[in-house]
Picture 1: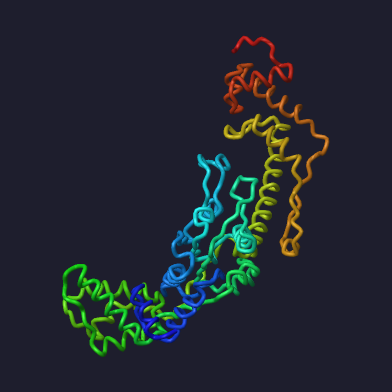
Picture 2: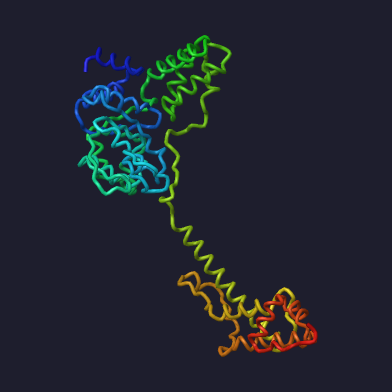
Length: 413
């Protein structure tokens, strides 16, 4: 591309910079614009990837049609299929009308899918079909729809790594990557950093009617040596801060150091675990711990039940906070539970004391009946006092008396 044509494009889209890698990206964008090939723009966050699809659309045969820029990372996973491919009325809660979706509305135009690496795998499969056949099915529909849309995608993630980790489809990557465009990070653009600072400073001065800030040579060197992990977006923010907060309009190296973060040792993004990217080791350890605690609890409960049965045999009153009704229910439940023996090598190293065995032919009704009879006997047949001693309601006591045939008239009700 001729230098004059390149400068015309930069002026039209307010693109500042003369580095070779930026010029190459613009050159590729203009060459691919007249075609319908898919384009994948790769670059770090904040480098200005959104300019390239606009250049491609405005210089393509589709320039008179619609252009939509969609941030795939900002759309919830549950609604992204509906947003992209549309839906029919009643297909889900809130679908009160039919919707064409972006692929339907942008027919004959261009769709810019920013952060395409954040798409769910199911949506990636549907996107691949649209790219290959131009066909898609809206959510809840049964009929196939046709569309003619030019796709330009962008991502700031390592797609090849995402493919290895199973987070991105390899066939979709090759389909999107028909024409790759690499946007350079700000730290590799040299003198462009100073040009961008001047632009942002001038914009702030015009907007707020203030004197423009000017950099000294020392300040320029500081800006060019900084790594700029936030790229152009971060440079703009810092320029705005300096323009507003600095009382001196001539910015020295010491002055600018107060606005540049000093803890940025790397330009790599922090690793964030997703719900599908977790280790099962912690879950396994938690499960083992739960199993051991459950086995211990079961053994403790069996010992308590054994003690309770001995108290009933000896005719001793049960504690006020441990009712016969509850004890009977627990006893019936516990006798059906076998101690849990996790199949783990760790369990073999744990000292385990076998609980005392209870008689297998235990008649629970007899134990409960004896407890009721003894409670009534100790309280002179007074059902209210007996119920209070056992810690159960009058209704529960009456029901159990009737069950065991003990509901005879009493003079001490």
